[in-house]
Length: 104
Image (cartoon, rainbow, N blue to C red; front, top):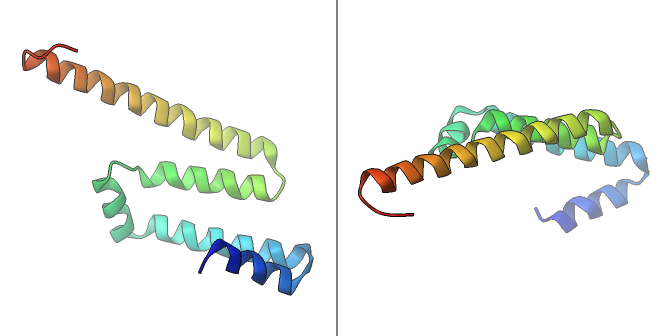
């Protein structure tokens, strides 16, 4: 299903309540996937933390329901954690190059 199909479905049903139900259902599905063991394993293998993705999904849900304070907090948490993990990864790569005799 494409984004256009989802939006068209929401328009056909009309009204804010229908749109809210459609978006809520899509986010429920996303959260269920992010809690599925097979999905978690696949994401972990790609270096993606499913728990952090759940926080991002929670932030998106909050934003779409108008709870901008919670959305801000969740997105800030996600951004900070991704940044921290990137810095740690860069430091580990730097140590690996130094240990192998390669320069930066």
